[in-house]
Image (cartoon, rainbow, N blue to C red; front, side):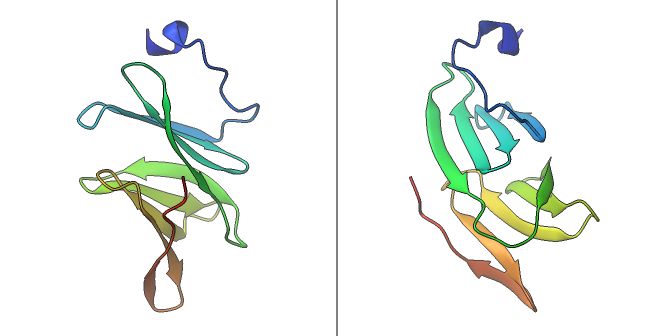
Length: 101
């Protein structure tokens, strides 16, 4: 199994994890952000910090990437599978954001 092969330690607190086979990504949600690993070799591709006031509690995959949800189920943001760019929800819609590495 994939997890058995991992030599890289995951964050101490994993809130949610998704294996995206079509893009070879392993998405790992921890208390400080989302880590995106290459699912083939477990290299960290990108860390996306959670610079928002709400607590992200879960990840859900869709055809464009991963959506981030609060404990109450409110959509907080999304991360694009191709660019790994995050956009965060603000009042009326999504607001483009990070290109952190």
